[in-house]
Amino acid sequence: MKRALGDWLLLGLTGAAVLVVLALMAVLFGLILVEGVPQLSGEFLTAAPSADMTGGGVGPALFGTAMMTLLMTVAVVPVGVATGIWLAEYAPKGSRLARWVRAAVANLAGVPSIVFGLFGLGFFILFVGRGVDRLFHGGEPVWGQPSLLWASLTLAVLTLPVVIVTTEESLRAVPDELREAALGLGATRFQTTFRVVVPNAARGVLTGVILAIGRGAGEVAPIIFTGAANFLPELPTDPREMFMHLGYHVYALSTQSPNVDAARPALFGTVLVLMTLSFGLSAVAMVLRHRMGGARS
Amino acid sequence: MSREATHPALPAERRQRKLGRFHTPWSHRLAERLLAVLATTAIGAVALIFLFIGREALPLLWESEALEELGGWAGLFLPQQWRGYEEASFVWQPVGHPGKFSLVPLFVGTLKVTLLTMLLSVPLGVGGAIYVSQYAPRRVRDVVKPLIELLAGVPSVVLGFFALVVLASWVQDGLGLTYRLNGLVAALGLSLTVVPVVFTISEDALQTVPRSLVEASHALGARRYQTILQVVLPAAIPGIAAAIVLGFGRAIGETMIVLMASGNAAVVDLFDATSSVRTVTATIAAELGEVSRGDAHWRVLFLLGVLLFTITYLLNQAGRAITEHLQARFTGAEAKR
Image (cartoon, rainbow over the protein chains, first blue to last red):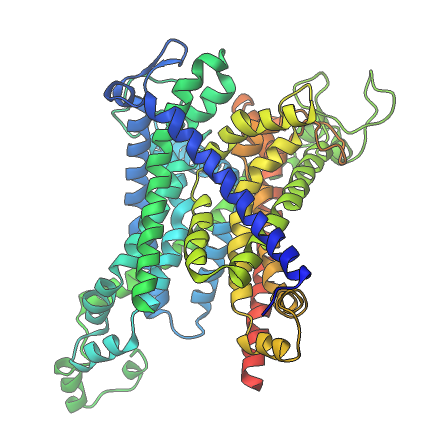
């Protein structure tokens, strides 16, 4: 069909919208690569920041981010995957508990990240931590202060909905024939779930976990009050210590540095490392998901 | 299975249950119980969030001393006459003497940045969704859609950094401004997180418009653009509305981008896009580290958290209600055919 003037207009306007977004993305990624890659070196990845944070590297921040992400993953995966499995395989049809769990998950996904920070401070540090201190340490602040542990648990709550939703979705995508076949062979429901359904959905579950890790590794707002330190050249040896974090380091470098121009190279280097960690993981998850979608359809 | 246990089993039946395929080892049953218990964690988390943020904020209701320091509820919500000001005004200046705690500038700031963000992101997101779902060849769509979705995976602190370092210079040079950081820069940065949300959900909504509607429109001789604007778009409106509401909620709750790029001065001026802005989220992030627990200021910051939680909760509920309405509408239409 020959295109009318209106078609050219609509095509032009909507196409331009896509181009604007893609162009901004190209500038964003291009700049980070161009200015960030020259900063990368073994020293940059391992050394502590020095000279008012304009020199040295991101060693402690990289280590802190990795440890935080690890603790967060250990906390969120069992609970998230279990909830996903229960929702997909066990929740009775029309069950009130399942409806409540789903509503809670949807809610949790919409809570602003700074509110998680307030929650981590109010619950983990001031209630749980201070409570333990009062009981066992005579009120000395041992647990009741910002730390790696509390920041990780706060982020575990933040990433919980991601793990739950992707786990449930990928379990639901497993065809019912597999379940029926397993049950028909005399397997219990438990055996069916864990030997047939879950292994068949493993890739989707993994996608969800990676997505959550990528999201959690990059969040800054929730850890400002729960554990991130501005400058702490020593590596944390105890989960009750504070830690440096790549994202928080980006924030500190770009807003609190006494000399912004001198800090620029270190800033771009840090952004690149953070992006590789957090965004790289999300990208892997996206590829996994799209490949999976293609295979099924 | 529990129903079977309520009537006394015959011996044969009991043996059957022990040997037959209905027999479930106790360890399996215990593990299944454990799954259900773990599944309640999400409910617990939501309850704890509300409870423990409220615990720090709500003593304002009965601690008359703290409330007095704020100038009562009027001090939070109504204009006050301060020394050095010509008329009664809304001022957020918690560390001044006396401290000025009007919440109005913060909410005006959040509203302004959010509206500007939506003004930028809705045309980009919905426009992009129309192009990708209606015009783009399949090969282009398969590349562009995941590419824009990738943007949602960029940490917000990186987008804040991008707004601060790059977008701020563009805006300053383009508009000839004295100060680099303002509401417009923050809104541009925020758009980068909101566009993928609006785009993805709108595109899904446009994609699910039944093919029959498009074919009927073409058969009646409508041009392609007429079909898109008058048939496809109206049919997808509930989904697009949900996308906009969810994007709005995302923009209100975002912290790092506004903290880094908005200038953070609490100016009450809803219509000047290039004035500095202090939002609710940035205020919490910037000030909580400097107050001691139990202060009036501390309680107000947690009160802001409670309000933020409530607002985003309502927005998400609205978004979900709209999506469900959309599903009901399409499955209903499907059934009638």
